[in-house]
Image (cartoon, rainbow, N blue to C red; front, side):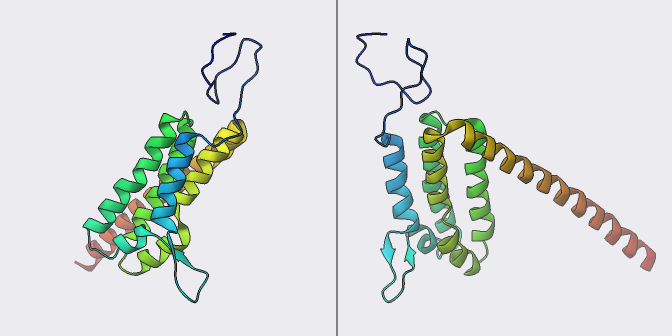
Length: 174
């Protein structure tokens, strides 16, 4: 590969066996950061230190606003996937978007949550951390995804147990 003038990606090794990392942010990181800024923190609310973006404002439009915000947020995932982020980190990013979508679907409360949670900024941070420290970010994301899976399984078991108890209670009333 000597004499090859192409820039090596963050996961490609040179002939010498080491990984070449460019100190400049990747194009995917720059695009994701710009989109996250637009969606999460484009404008400062006068008289406060609070910044809001398009996402909580779109959330005020019933149904369509959350859908449009979700599609725009998903593009950060697309950029991350194209830049070589691991599947584990992508799952963690998806969990951030899922949390934002579930809580964001509650009228008004969800819009306030959007202002504080900033799923897109979290995902950009994961993207940049992965490219700076892939093994550490992947390991931490793996633990996070594991906790989410266990919590989802526990929630599923609890809902089934709750349903069984309700059915038994109703059957006892008859």
